[in-house]
Length: 218
Length: 250
Image (cartoon, rainbow over all chains, first blue to last red):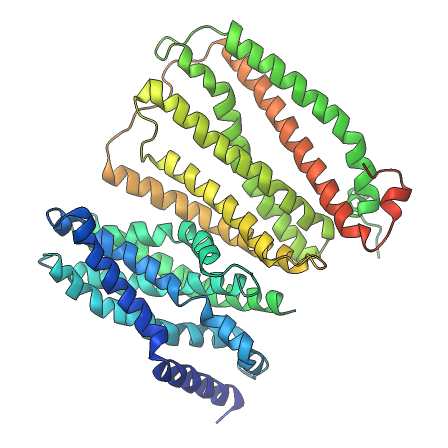
C-alpha cells in the first residue's frame, strides 16, 4: 500500500476509534439538542410549535454544531498528534477533509437521524424535507466550522468567540436549510442553493482550513 | 531586478510614518470642514422632505456611515490579502486599524437607521434584508476584533495578524452569499417593505450629503491613519528607536 493511503487509513482509524472511545464528545451535542428542544414548548407554549418546528430545529442544529468544534484541532495540538498527521505523507487538505468527514459522521449524521423524531414530537406530519435539508446542511456547517476551529486554535477565549465568528457566516446555511425544511413551493430552490453552497465549501474549505492551520502553527 | 515602483516604498514604516504625518493635518481639517458644512447645509438650509418632514435629515449621518461601514470591510479584506501575499507589516497594521472604524460606522448605521425608522416607518426595526445584513456586518466586525485580541500575545502580533487576515478574507468571500441569502429570505418572508426614499433629491440636499460624506470619509481616513501609526509605533518600539529619531513619534 502506498504511503499516503496508509497514512489516510491510519488517520481514519484513529479518528474513528477516538470518537468511539470518547462517547461524551458526540453524545453531549445530541443531549444538548434534546434538552433545548424540550425548552421550546415550555418557553413558547405548545400551540404554534408545529409551524415553527423546522426553523427551531435548524437553529438548534446550528448551535449544536458549535459545541464540539473547539476541540476539533485543539485536542490534537495539545497531545501532539496534530504534528504527526501534519508531517505525514498524506496531503494536508485531504487529512483535514478526512478529519472533518469523521467528525461529521459522529456529530452531524446523528443529528440528521434524530431531528425527524424531534419534529414528530412537535407534530410535524412529514419530517422528510427537514431530514433532507439537514443531510445537505450539516456537512456545510462542519466544513465552515472547521475553518473557524482552525482560526481559534491559539485564542484565549474558546466557545463564545467561535460562536461570534461562525454564526454570522453560517447565515446562508440557516436561511437555505430552514426554508428547505419548511416544505412548500420554495423548498426545491432552497435545497438546490444549499447543495450549491455545500459544493462550494467542499471544494474550498479543506484547502482553506489546511492553509489556516499552517499559518496558525508557525 | 527592476526597480520597484515609487509607491512601494510606503510599505516601509520609515516612509509611511512621515507620509501619514504630513497627510493627517489636512485630513482632520477636511473632516471638520466637510462635516460642519455638510451638516449645516443638511440640517438648516436644505428644504424639508415632502413625505418625511424633518425626520429625513438624519440621512446626512446615516448614508455616509453605511457607505463607510461597507467600504471599510472591503479595505480590510484588501489589506488582509496584501499582507498574506507579501507579508508586509504595514498591511496587517492597516487592516487592524480599519476594524474599529468600520465597526463604529456599522453601529452608527444601525443606530441612525433605528432613529430614522421610528418616525417614518413607525418602528425601530424591521427584519428587512438591508437592515439584517447591516446587523450581520456589524457582527463580522466585532468577530474580527474579538478574534485578533484573543489570539494576540503582547510580544508577537503575527498570529493575531494572520488569524484576523484569514477571517477578513473568509468574511469577504462569504459576504456576497450572505447578502444573497438574506435578500432571498426577505423576498420570501415579506412583501415589498417601505422604501426609505421616494422623491427626487433637491440640490441643497445633494450638496449637504456630498459634503458630509466627504467629511466622514476624511474622518475615517484620519482615524485609521492615526490608529495605524500608534499600532506601528507599538510594534517597532521594542525593535528600534528610529521612529523617535525621525521625529515622527507623537
